[in-house]
Amino acid sequence: MIVDKIKKRQTVQTNKKSRIDIPVGKWARCDKCKNIIYKEELRENLSICPNCGNYFKLHINKRLELILDKNSYKRFDYDLETTNPLELEDYPKKIQALRQKTNILEAVSIGTGKINGEELVICVMDSGFLMGSMGIVVGEKITYAIEKAIELKLPIVIFSASGGARMQEGIMSLMQMAKTTEAISKLDEAGLLYISVLTDPTYGGVTASFASLGDVILAEPNARIGFAGRRVIEQTIGKELPEDFQTSEFLLEHGFIDKIVERKYLKDTIYNIIKFHKKEV
Image (cartoon, rainbow, N blue to C red; front, side, top):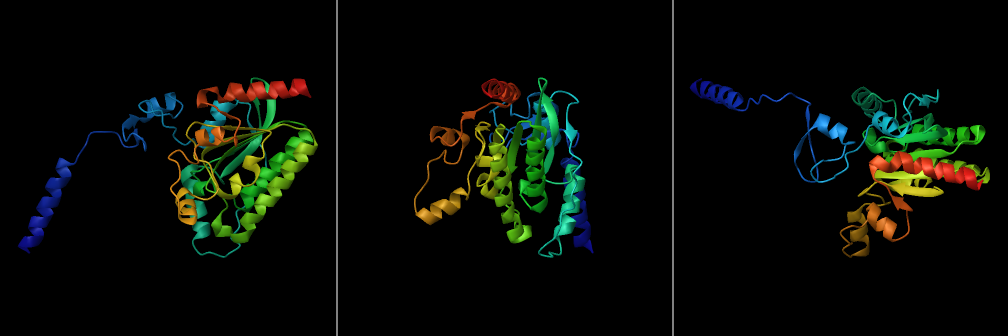
């Protein structure tokens, strides 16, 4: 058909015009200022936009690299298989796909490490894995890490990045709030230090449990932190909320967190808190 030939010719011409000689996967787009950034430049700047200062989310491995002394991280040998309590057809497939995409088994990594020589237990959540949601495995691993901190008599640092409880696991995910909270209570009874670091985003059941229970609560600049989302709250109360509502700056002003720390200063800040606590004890 002549029409088909014309369509084919137009498609070929369009493809030729759209060819761009830029290596795939070498560039990133800032969600805030919309500028295109060379990924290598972004990595060198600690995954912070050099144009507007917007913080990009960090992969677990990158976070551990920035915070811990080189080669000091020892991951706990505590791998659990994610279950499917609601028997959802696509859930196991989604988990497998995320494991291949992110190269991590679940939304949290736990282990021991050192900061300027000071040993600690560390948990790092990754919002790139199902929005860092807290299901059975995530809750159990965080609880295990807290229990190991008690056993080893070490301080614990938890980096939270989560959308909240994992809806694919129903009420079983909500039970992790009580479990992790109880573990933190035992850590407190043992007189051990817990530093909670809130990163973007930290929401839902994570905020409502272990993330808010630190002896010291730190946050990265402009991190979104809360329980319910902004639109849900506005619809519920029938009022418009402040522009900076649920940002780390808003929460610092209202006494919810202790300090906002730029990414480049987090390692030294955590180290100083650990050293200070050791002197006080």
